[in-house]
Structures are given as C-alpha cells and as structure tokens.
Length: 336
Image (cartoon, rainbow, N blue to C red):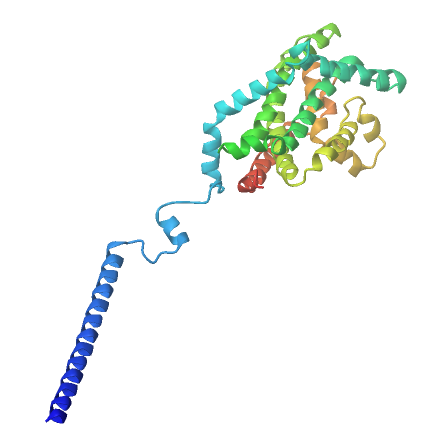
C-alpha cells in the first residue's frame, strides 16, 4: 500500500513539474513576443532609427563647421561683410600709428623718406637722374605707386597667421582679411597721392585732364593687389617662412620695375625677349601709367601697345584667379 501511495506521489509531482515547465515555456515565449512587438513598434514610431550619423546629419541639413560654401554663396557672404571689411581696415589704420607722436603723419612721411633715400643713392651717387626730366617727380611717383603693391603683398602674406585668434573665435569669410589689409594700403595711398600731387605742382608739372586717369589706374591696381594679397595669404598660411622670404622677392621685383631708373635704357640694347618681359611687368606698367597721367615730360611712347587692355588683363587674371585660389582652401584656415 505504501508503495502504491509513493508511486502515485512521484507521478503527481512529475506531472506538476511538466506542467510548470510547459507554462514557463509558454510564458517566456509570450514575453519574448511582447518585446519583439514593442521593438517593432518603436522602430515604426522613430523615423531616424537605423540611420548612420552622416545620414542623420544630411537628413536634417547639418554640415561640418567651417565647410567651404559654393563660390557664389561665398561671394554673397563676402559682400554682406563689406561694412566689417571697411570698419576693420579703418580701425587697424588708426591703431597703426597711435603709439607714434606724429600719428597719421607717418602715412605720408614713410614714402617721402623712402623717396629721399632712393634719390640720394640712385639720383646723386649713381647718377640715374641723368636723362630723366624732373627726376624727383619721376622717382616719387614710382616709389608711391610701387609701395602700394609692396605693402599689400606683405600684409596679405601675414593676414591669416597674424589673426588666428579672430579666425577661430568668429565665423566669417576668411577673404575679408586680405581684402581688408589691401584696403588699408589703399587708404594710405590716397593720403600719399595728395602729397604726390603737391610734389608734381612744385616740380613744375601742370594740372591737366590726364590727372583723371588716376582713378582707373588705382582701381585696376587695387584689384591686381587684392588678388596677389589673397594668393600670398593662402601660401603664407601654409608656409609661415614665406613672410621672411617675401621682402627679398619684392625688393628684387622693385629693381626690375623702373622705380628709380628708366627701363628704356636697358631695353634699347637688350634682346627682344628680355625687352618684352620687362615691358610686360605689371608693376612697371602701373608706374609708367601713373607717370604718364601726372607728368607731361613722360610721353605716351614709353607705354606698350594696347596698354589698357594689358592692364585690365593683369587685374582680372590676378584678381579673379587669386580670389578662387584663396577660396579653395577656405575650410583650412585657422585649423590647428
């Protein structure tokens, strides 16, 4: 009897165990099904599920900070910052001489002192004044005009490296900087041109309608200088040693540009190809155009044929080319 009861109890316990296992399996299956259904529901509810970070950014119109915009959009952004460029240039120009007792007078004194040194060396000691009527006016015109190009290039070379704090703190088209530094040099030249006009009158040069040519000459030279400044700004940002090398390069260019000597004294006996290269020198062309505009003793024959088309070509090639060249590295400026 006890054996029968024991066997019945064992059979009952095993039956209950199988039932619990079966219920557990059904319960686990039900729970798993519920979680799967909820996961599917959440996926259906979140439209961003399964997207990579790049896909998610593209979907919501996000882009990399500092990414180079298209050229036309970049140009519109630059135009919208024109007041910033003008204000930045004016503020830097005023601050440039605040520590000097003579202040803004140095804007005029610097080119005058340079002209005085060049007159002493080349006019008196080396005798380059022989054969050049009104040599002082001739020399001052060359010094004032070439210094505009020289200063624009040198300041443009350092425009990025010297303003990294501003670049990293604010978002703006980086081309504002080399353009602003060229505007600074143009403002200085405008002051100097007033003094140059006085020098011309004192030297006996009459005021003629040719003086109106000053406006298109300075306009074309400004475009040319701005393009060169942007080219050198990009190069100087990547190769910081370029700022140390450029003064020697520009000094060599100045000696070849007829600032204090008449290039015709060399081209008259030089090979044809050398004469053509010298006469096509843009710095020489700007110098001679300004001398022709201000001085009646400088004949039109010193200018190459189609000189205004050549000047326009130099301005457009370097102005537009330098702008595109600078824009291509827009997103790299100020990166650590």
